[in-house]
Length: 410
Image (cartoon, rainbow, N blue to C red; front, side, top):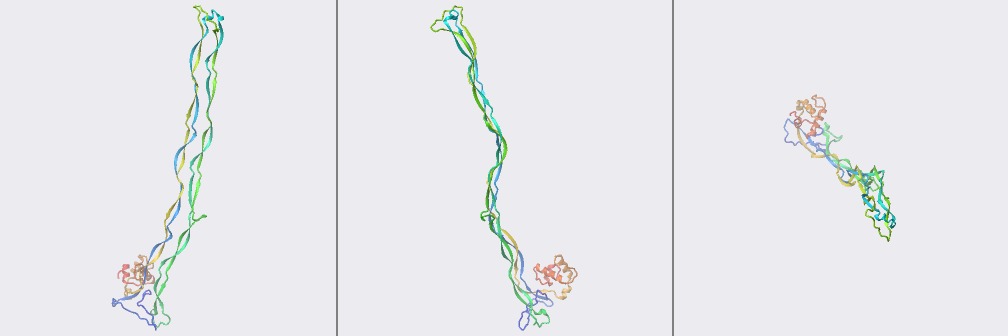
């Protein structure tokens, strides 16, 4: 008889009399049976235990920039001055020097001097060129912006006990004591129902305790990042162009001519006498000199700069929960009752080909010993393991169901 199964339920009664009840009407003569205690059947299942709950955390978003092509002023727009020359016209001038009557009566005339302008004074301009200086000027390539930093949240580990195997009851065979009167000690065993406490596993759960700052709840830091600049060589106007006005003196000629004295009458001149003239060529100013201001456009050079599209910011983000997987033992089929089943009698076991059973167990990975055809302890342990994992009564006995499951007949 197996140590895991009993042929009958023994009851300890004074004065230590054991009785066995045989109430299996399906039994047939010539066959062997065993009464087994059917244990509870469990399976191991995995379960996710919450280790960090779902939470909202602040997440820092960096500033967003956009690169653009731009230009800076190498030389600014300025004014260039130029002079438009005066316009002249030449003309011929006849000046009466002496009338015809002067030769007849010179004393009737008196000599006078007259200034005749051959070219009158005119206004002109002296123009100076603008004066430039070369300097280095800071050009902004990245604007001032805000950077956000979120300090990492700190957690503390909090232990929690998770039940992985519930409390159960199990029948255990124990010896009665020294007062047993049976010749076979196995007949003096008693079945005791014992309580097996639940088994737990310690799982650590994370709970937030704030960030590493003076205010544990204020985990967001804002920093103003100054603008970035580069030095570029440019020209700047030191002195603008200037115009200085000056008068250019004119040209003249002093002419002496004769004119009739006051109160005198012009004498009659002979017919052949003629007036005497002085013919001069002189310039007449039609348009004065003018000052013209011409605009000179600025000179540019290209460069690449960053434009701030969005400043750094902090947003709330839902962080998913985290779990720890534990293995729990779950009751699949309740036991705790006795059942009869047929086993092979000793004479039939002797007829079995144990080698085939050992080979079948070895192919399935339950047996690693020698294939010697001997029903040894290692073979019986392999049979029991096979029965446990294939939902068969795990007593190590060879029965029809076990043989059929192994595929060796029965």
